Length: 167
View 1 (cartoon, rainbow, N blue to C red):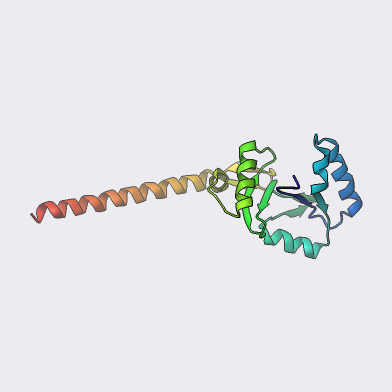
View 2 (view 1 turned 30 degrees about the vertical axis):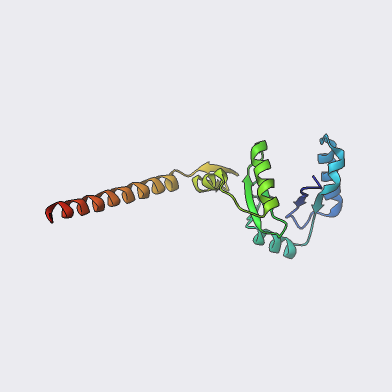
């Protein structure tokens, strides 16, 4: 951390002040093995207007309900030019996913990701505050794929029949 990348944590609760950010950073750093890396982890708070601009620009959506925020968890990796390279969803990440994300971000290139496929297969349930498998969406994709295969098969079969009868 620091040489190759920096970590930025942004609170989207405008009522939080810098002293809370300092306390949270200290709590996280106390659990880190490499204390030197902590100086490259920045915590930010801001006003509601700037928070809204930032969260909208990176596609991060949240809602406030009953004095709590409902939001997805994850990381957003940016290239040095500010372009979004990858979204890593959840709270547990495989070392390979982190490594490939950092490599892609360093190159400024967006690569294929299983997380994009998972984003299609899962939806965020605001009531349960978690991602759930979206059976309807997956079924629709599979049915569409089968319909396209049948259409291609019938079209190619028809072409073959025409060729046979025209001889």
